[in-house]
Image 1 (cartoon, rainbow, N blue to C red):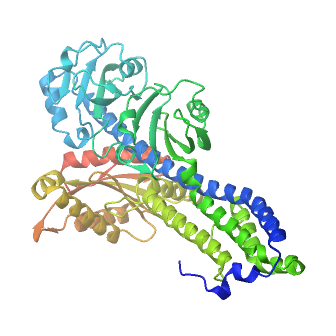
Image 2 (cartoon, rainbow, N blue to C red):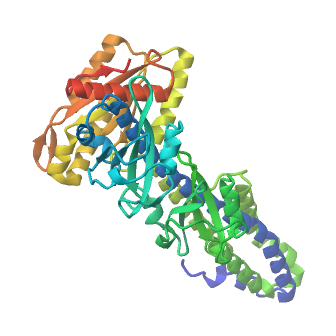
Image 3 (cartoon, rainbow, N blue to C red):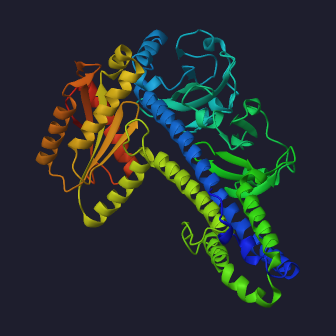
Amino acid sequence: MRAIRAVDSMVMRLVAFAVLVLLAGGLARQAATESGLRAGVEKLAATQQLALARYVAGDIDGKLRLRQHQLEALARGLSTQLDGPPAMIEDWLMQRQELTSLFSLGLALVPLDGHGAVAEVPAIGVRSRLEFAGMDWFDAVAHGASFTVGRPRIGRSTHVPQLAMAVPVRDTEGRLQAVLAGFTALDKPGFLDLIEHNTIGNGGGLLLVSPRDRLFVAASDPTMGLRPTPPAGVNLLHDQAMAGFRGTGVTVNAQGVSELSAIAEVPATGWFVVARLPTDEALAPLHGLQRVNLWSSLSIGAVVVAFLVLFLRTTLQPLRSAAAQMRRVADGEAELAKLPVVRSDEVGQVLEGFNYLVEKLQASEARLAALAHQDALTELPNRRAFMEGAARILARAQREGSTLALLFIDIDGFKPINDAYSHLGGDELLRQFADRLRETVREGDLVTRFGGDEFMTLLSGPIAADALSARVGRLIEQLSAPYSLDGQRVRVGTSVGVALFPGDGADLERLIALADAAMYEAKRKGSGQPVLGA
């Protein structure tokens, strides 16, 4: 910050006034504003912490739900394969690489007696000799659960920290026949990276906690992974979080350090994410502001007593206005915004310092908002943003009696391209595919990258059958045209499954499930042949 000129300095303005009287006045002013400033800074820091915790929790929830959907899709397919020999079942699973790839430690099909695995992918042979009866995830599904996530633990066959997820496998009559389990390494890249590879400030970090298991699943501090949570009474805010509290608060951790913590739920499992930062570090800007105020008060101690009240009212009016504005922001009565700086004295420095803090917080919130609603690779709306927008569109269509079409789109032949051109080439193909999809749909249609090489489009209505067929045909034609990778023209196919609203259902999840199933039917028929979900 540029140096203050002597004629602009508050010290020089107040040098002729009574030091002792205005020193007392300055100290009183600082005491009066400290409470409001502290509350404002704490609220801003807590808001940022909570936004980060919610973003990380949403990211983990999305990855767990994606694995749930993959397991459920495999279980539905296995219902027609149960009478075959184990080798045939394992071969069937191996052929569905797009569904099994998220489980880095493989899958196992376990009979209802829990003795060994009937089939496993990859076939390492160890799980066929293990006893699964008594495992929490196996018992839960065997007793009627439709999906469960087991206790994070060191795997008996892999000897690495892992997470088991399981779903029931039923025959064509709906009878429970087996349990399908998928195993993912906790340190698998792209799974818990936001927890394990990020810190907050100099002394803060992230925690992922399973209250059911009283266990730290993962943490920014690698030594805390799979360690039990502290006993009740050690950390009061932690005790409240274990009992269901979600939000922000100040607590003292097991090491005796005061922390500002934000807690957000992971709905798929009941876990919660904690974003924590030492209170002293969170309030560092306030401490600096307090020091500036103190020196300002000390500096104006030479002001003449006769002019004290009038001079202070005139000189300190911008600071009082700024403090009032900060309180309004802290109380939610005004939006967070920069304050006008009309002078270059100490008061101006305070306002410039606050404005710098506001600028940094706004930039951080903008980055978090973009990450929370945008797919990082394709810059399409992510699944969360798509689901929120689709829900609003379906509600409006239901009120207006309009029709909609949900398209589930999958790239055929993506894996060979990814293998031939590396992940960088695969990513470039996904970006080009997303750009072409974005350009092909109409204004008002929603587009998202649903996961991997799967995309989804919600076509706004009204939708006539012949017009829909033509639109889908043009879409497939555009998406199946050649792409350019490393100067070479490559082709991929496109499989499209279609579900209609309200004909196929009025619920978004049901429409997605029908369109997903129709997409796989389209794959079986051959690339470029769309299939309706119902």
